[in-house]
Length: 152
Image 1 (cartoon, rainbow, N blue to C red):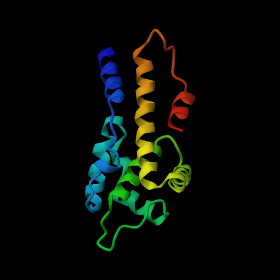
Image 2 (image 1 turned 135 degrees about the horizontal axis):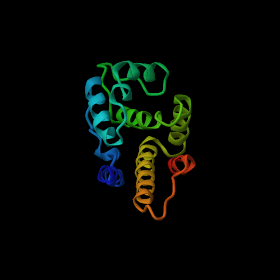
Image 3 (image 1 turned 90 degrees about the vertical axis):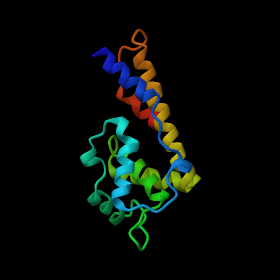
C-alpha cells in the first residue's frame, strides 16, 4: 500500500499539463477534444465518464462558459484550454465560480497567460502537497484549506 501511495505522490509531483504552445494548433472535432482532455487529466484519476462528454461540451457552449466552435463544429486550441481548465476545476469548485474565475483571469492577463498560469498553479499545488505527503515525519495531515489556497 505504501508503494502505491509513494508511486501516486511521485506521479503527482511530476504531473505536467501542456502549456498553450504544447496544445495542438489545429482544429479538433468534439471526440478528439474529449480524448485529449481525458489524456491530459488522466494522472489526476478523475472519473472519465463525467469528466467531459459531448453533452457537457454542448452545455458549456450553451451557458457561454466556452466560445462557440467554428462553422464546421471544430474546436481550437483556445477551446481545448478552456475544457482542460474547467474539467480540472469543476472537481473542487462549482461551475459558476469556475466561469467567473476564468472570465476574471482572462480579462486581467489574456487567455494564453491565464491558461499557462492555471497549468503552473495546478502543477505547483500538486507538487507542494505531494512533497509534504512524502515527508511523513513533517506531515500529520493536509488540511483542505492547504489545497484550496495552493490553487488560488
